Length: 74
Length: 162
Image (tube, rainbow over all chains, first blue to last red):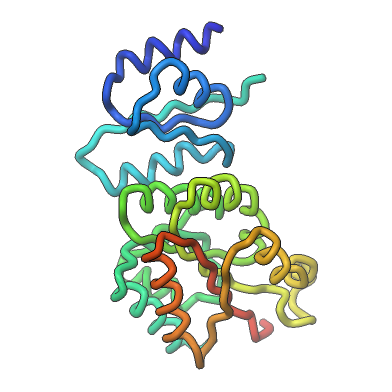
């Protein structure tokens, strides 16, 4: 519950910038609280949100991206 | 595979629009990697999954990308390939060195080497063996698939012992 509220607040603050979110609850919470077309919800490939983020950032050096990652939650 | 073929393959793929070569080195394709390093167009990752993640980000940004790895690393990456690359249909080319192709290769490559063709088949990844004779045709095939937003694997047999 606390995480979901935090994701909602952070996403609101980020506004329209693209967000890449880690698998599991992070992506679900983001989808439920701040769905937008330029978000990328990674639902498998645990641990790779930061790598995908690196690839995207390398090719778009002038653009701002936000990566939401987390440790495993249960 | 011969040194000359490996260097030509790198340059063919580059010429055909692949701007990004990300992976974990494998000596089976050392001249391919060397050619890219010389041109400063190779990005080395610490794990194959990481390379696939980076390549996915590149591909999502609209550029053509290739991931190179050994088949030991391919086996590491099965879940990443199925749950990221295939699930989201992210186009890229895999270049995979096939250790364990020869019967008396190092013992750690024996098991995965034996099931390598089955592993590729079982996850539904289209692939072709690339060699000194067919590399031009196979490169064209891979690029054609990539332009159709598909993902394919090119396999280099480890045909020598060291």
